[in-house]
Length: 529
Image (tube, rainbow, N blue to C red; front, side, top):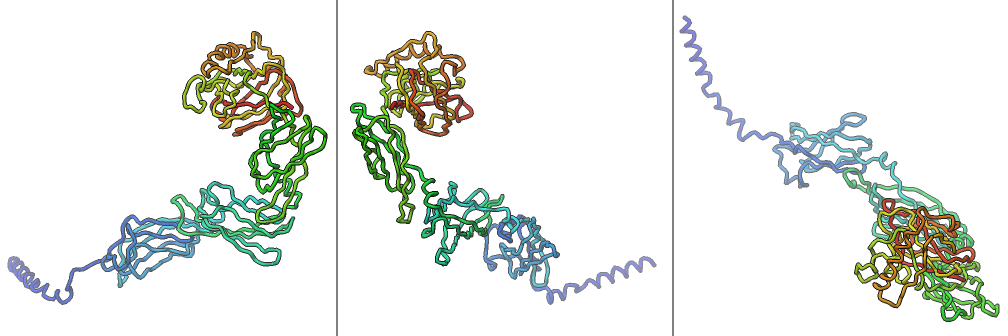
């Protein structure tokens, strides 16, 4: 019986499978295609209250993209009011998600969808947009305001202009209302010099300036996509004529030197003209007691003064014209230094406390003893050569200048082409050197440079050994002058009164390097009334 039942089951099964694929052709005419997914590594570009999500390696037209039966791109993310769903009616290589005002890192879920709502596998991307909360932590620097009685100059002095490590500057718009009630506007772009001027103002006028600065913030990933705007208002005030003149600098002079061959004549050597300077006038007393005036055009760098009266200070006044105006403002007369005699240094000698280091040169490029930082080089009136202290030696560095006899000193100038690495500098003048065994020495300046060094080096090395171990010493007295001169290429000591002594001592207690005891001097100048 069991065998009959098994046989019937087998026959029934075989006949029931017959024709099971007979109707499939009516319903499946092609291969089934599902919705494709985006790549696994989308990237995010940050914008202002938005992000751009790159779903492919490049940006393509939707017509050039194929993801199976996908017809839409969908992006989902959470906001405070719940899940947000952005639908783009095409398959996109990138999407722009706007309205992201919450300062947080968003998690975006991106997938493709077909016309029946079938979804692809989602991919994720993270991005934190730049928002108003980020912008609140930004500010742009106010300009330096340079007032005159009728103009105002606004300047930014940063090397990068208005840009900083936090943002790239794009554009600045400014506006103000002039004295006639008219609104005046202007702008600066990133290609412009960061400055602008306002003219036609009144003295001591206080007025508001409205400024709008367009910037591109820089995040950890780099500059964001968008330009954002910062706004602020500040007040500017023009100067009174008195305030304007008090802020001006009289044209600086380099020297006022009496001629060696004629003590009744002197030459004033001027530095370059200062801002707004239109002309300079000096007056000096002649030997008959009458004051003589000389007008100096800005183009001239020297002024000859004749029949001068020794021991009387000459005076100077300057005229200034603010830019873009015709107004002229003239200072009061101001006393300057006396006309002075500059000493010839050729018979003098110099002893450095620690000798010299074989660096430097005389312009020839050679590295002989003569061109290698020898102390005698500060006496040769050649700015290309100079003394260089020996590396590794202790502070203070000291130069002792022997003027060969007691001399009147009214002014002392220290020069260095590279600033000498000076910081604090002290000057002493004495007749009592207190160096037991010190002997004077004369250099034959008519001989060759090498012969001068040979004649000088043995003597100077003996004298170095006689300098006190812990300068300064009591016999030098108190400093006749001291100052701090960082990065100065020329340092001038104008003494309040003329002093006398044979030995000028320049002491450098430190330098501005902070890691070495190096000092250099390329020349000195000594003057008397």
